[in-house]
Amino acid sequence: MKFTKRTFMKSLLAVSVLGFAGLSSLPAYSNTEDPLKLGFLVKQPEEPWFQTEWTFADKAAADLGNVQIIKIAVPDGEKTLNAIDNLAANGAKGFVICTPDPKLGPAIMAKARSYKMKVITVDDQFLNAAGEPMTQVPLIMMAAEEIGQRQGQELYKEMLNRKWDVKETAVLAITADELDTARRRTEGSISALIASGFPEKQIYKSPTKSNDIPGALDAANSMLVQHPEVKNWLIVGMNDNTVLGGVRATEGQGFKATNVVGIGINGTDAVNELSKPNPTGFLGSLLPSPDVHGYRSVELLYKWVKDDVEPEKFIAIGDPVFLKRENFKEELAKKGL
Ligand code: GLA
Image (cartoon, rainbow, N blue to C red):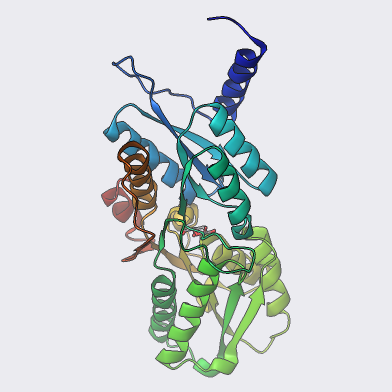
């Protein structure tokens, strides 16, 4: 091969992509054909949720054979667009993405189109310039409203179990309404609480500035101080970290675990909390199927690229499992997590 400046640049890019994608093990192919390369880009690689999607993306690739998944962390817009350039330089034919910001949708699609790459979204849906969902881009996500409703029902059930006086109880709902899946989960939860009979006027919403524990902790703290009259708190939030932030805030303000119930969503991100020797206010978590999100999305992308089979535009994955301290190890193992 003639060693031109271009090939040198290409190999540099390849090395840098493989480097930050954390690809320690390249698949061992017995055949000599180049592997089909597909990207898997996620906004928050520190969340076990996304690590699980990556793991199952690799499983799908192994089952399909001669497919290589290039995994890249995309915490912001700039990194996302750079990642797409890097994928193209590496010859990737498409990618699965959970975007750091739904409003990047048009920019991501324009770039992907310029490289003739296929795109499948997971978890978070793209929005167009008018703020409407980009329903033409295939999406695999959890059944957000249904899982939220389950959260509300389980919170109400636990309030009854504990024989709390509803007059002394309030709901702290930590919201992230800019993210549609988050809004649908918390709205689902709140509507299920109201439908069960919880008084609407005792439901307090506090928006979080960031979708992580510190952001949720701040949002919760500012609401807790406004309601010194409340003895017991039920905590609603869009995922485990949000609810964990809420629980940490109640602890910081002197509430005992017996006066707090939080139920997360994701499951994968609740393992440390549920492993603690003493119960906290975090009762458990609803585990949907990050394994299915990771596996299915790669399988669909592969068929699209390879056989031109267009995926369905929308796949919602429901039926969460309620993980608690007593069953979480067993339930996670059942799913191979
Ligand atoms: C969003 C959240 C993640 C996870 C996924 C699952 O992206 O930020 O924590 O809940 O949805 O769909």
